[in-house]
Length: 75
Image 1: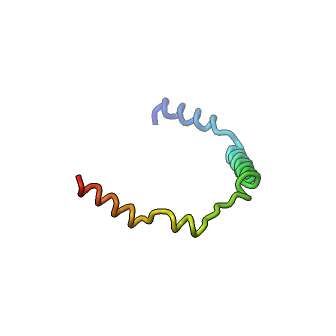
Image 2 (image 1 turned 180 degrees about the vertical axis):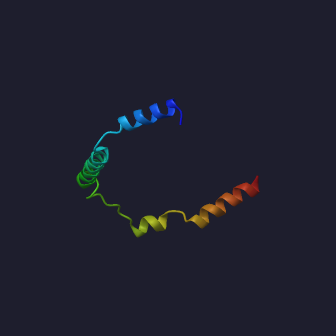
Image 3 (image 1 turned 90 degrees about the horizontal axis):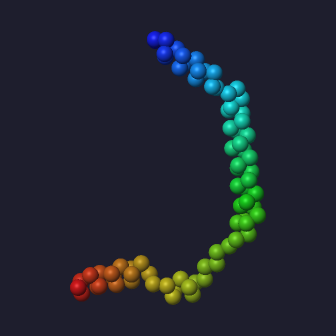
């Protein structure tokens, strides 16, 4: 190592912040709690209703595929 490498290494070591891992863990934990609270407050009670009539009335994938093939062959 030359003198420049030693200076860079010592400055990188000096930049390390003690307790950084603990601080990051706390920040991540707080964010997870906030996300959980937002979900609990806004999403938890939401439901999607699927009725058999709606499914029966919608075109199936097979019908859509057949319609696309007919259009391309007609051109």
